[in-house]
Image 1 (cartoon, helix red, strand yellow):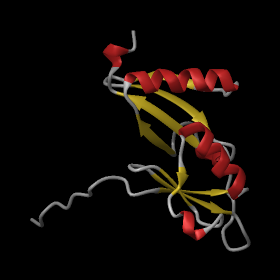
Image 2 (cartoon, helix red, strand yellow):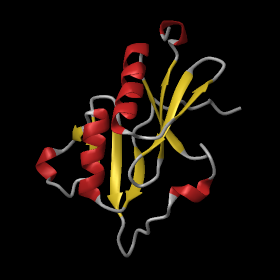
Image 3 (cartoon, helix red, strand yellow):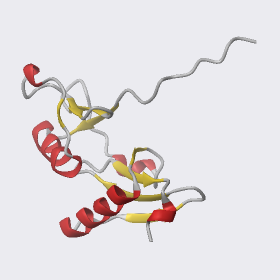
Length: 133
């Protein structure tokens, strides 16, 4: 049997977005992400932080924008991990912003599901359920 290969982690997730500048602003505000290659200018698709990278690819003639709404509930999403304190802060931030979200308690974690401006489903999850109060 061949040796099982293991990846080191999620390198990046890529979303096709309607408006690159608008999406970058939203991710900067919601998650505190910044441009990962500031020298590349505003057309650079990569945004994130030291541990998380997103490639936001603007729709064009060669790259169609397909609405995520027809993919089914929670079928396709990106999950970001958080400690309990940060998890609760995201819940407050979403509430304060008037953003609709869904809370789910799983067997080993608790999650908040919400959508970005293009309708992509995002999740913030914590395994520190005992610290949520």
